[in-house]
Amino acid sequence: MKIRHVRKLRRAGGAAVLVAALAVSVTACNGDEGAAPSASAASESPSGEKGQGDDAGSGQDQQGGGQTLPDTGKVIATLKGESVEMVLYSVTRDGGGFLTVSGEVRNTAGKRYTVPTAWSGEESAIVRTGRSFAAMTLVDSKERKRYYVLRDTDNRPLTTTGFSPWIQPNESLPFFAQFPAPPQTTTKVDLQFPGFPNAPIEIS
Image 1: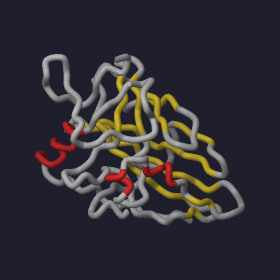
Image 2 (image 1 turned 60 degrees about the vertical axis):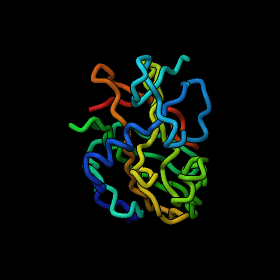
Image 3 (image 1 turned 45 degrees about the vertical axis):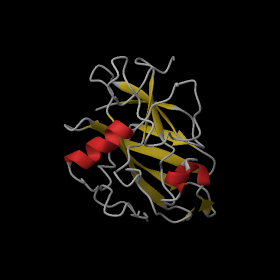
């Protein structure tokens, strides 16, 4: 039995999503990993143009958002946590310059699992949107960049939100999270999420 809290991801128009993409900030791979950056702290390239990441060496209800769970027949990674496991089914690019991670968190214990508040991140603007997967990040070691979950123009994270604070025994919570896509030359990133080990995953 699965808790299906994931809905169709709202495409709020090219301009709205583009603003969210430009607003995302990327910190150093060896920088703070707890809180996502504020939407106003857009990173800049050496030429002064806003970008989707900076040099790391120098660190639902989705209110109309969401996407359906992809084909569960192919598992690309399984991350073991305490009493739960995260199963990843797809990490895919789209033509708009975005990358979407889809999977589910399964309760593998015989008792109810309480969803950690750390999953939502620490930034107050994001925490106010409720429970989410906003703390998920992707690290591109090759380009030395870290990517955070995108946000819409209302500062809501483009990820599964508004789910129950518990996952019952033998149930699972499907999720998605959308990020700026790394360069085409990047074919692998490390997924980081509170309570789970870092996992290298290939981009399809």
